[in-house]
Length: 516
Image (tube, rainbow, N blue to C red; front, side):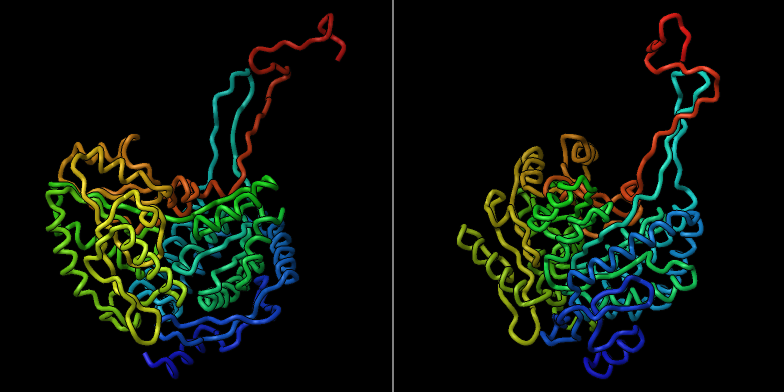
């Protein structure tokens, strides 16, 4: 791709410019904001566009509009809300190639992954459309005669959605499309490292919303000031605050939500392990490990960061991984032959270098990689390090393609190692032993929100609820019954009789039984 003429053409098709506004309430009007920040091409290190920086006044205006839009949107029948999301999915299908290219251009993931991310948006939209005709409650047995006991679900309110750069489109859609069919409105604060993708999506949203009288259902706040996310977390108008990012930032934002008794949905860090036992099929395991460790240049919350291999197979796995890593083509994410693009920015490269240095200082042996790649852009070599699970650097999440290799002898030891980190997102076991697979999936097995057998840690499907435990935050998004996070539950009692029996057999009568 010619990063000149072709970028201009892509921008034209997606409604982007070299200078872009800061915020929109979703009604077709955009606010200029206060000051600017830059979107950068991580493959070259050069700026792509300037973006307006939303200020406090912009945040207040967008929240006011979202709260007002909610009062209208909650009255729209859920199947009609689903039609709005259905038409959004159709527009995403039509612009999938351009949006996937933009994702690759702006955040550096290879174009195949960029296209996959837009496909994920389409998939969750289709899921949400079906959900719009299935949201239901329960009828429960009442202990009182002539009484009906039920529960029903109502729209919740404004959802504040803060997303990370690594999935600049899909994670918003997990929240937004489910929230929309549930009757909520959504204020999106994307990563300042991926604002163009958010703007392009909102240009599509506005066109479709105009056809469905859905202006204000989705709105956008752009900025590089961390105070913007904190403002959403602290604002009482935000009924649900959904945050995707590091555990450190989650630790800061969650108390702001709790202080006002708000709802919080956290998708924070992962420190995911793959266990390989003596029986594992390495032809199955190796591709999953390499994609899990190298995909998106190690910048996924589900990236494979620890590889726990039975001691009898450690040398074989290390040799085969070294051979595979040597064949990973690193370069322009828009080149179809590339398997690994750049890190997101110069700071990420510095964090990579610091992690490798810390692992070496602790006694780690770098088997493959470990270096920056000279030239323009933010490229590093995929890295394999012989390490120990208890080292502080191994206990932390480093958003880079670093894989720590460690042996084990007994399967219980492998599970203990798997669980002995603060995070609890995704986990995997490669085995041909059925009893071990069941042991891994038992309550005493993996303590993660996602557990895989003969599949890697990365690449979750939208049909299941996505999220993790411990410092990952406990959030659940996308499929299964994750929709319940975006609604409020109401227990309902209907008395169809002429008397008022109390629960638990309580008798509460005035003397003489009369006189009410």
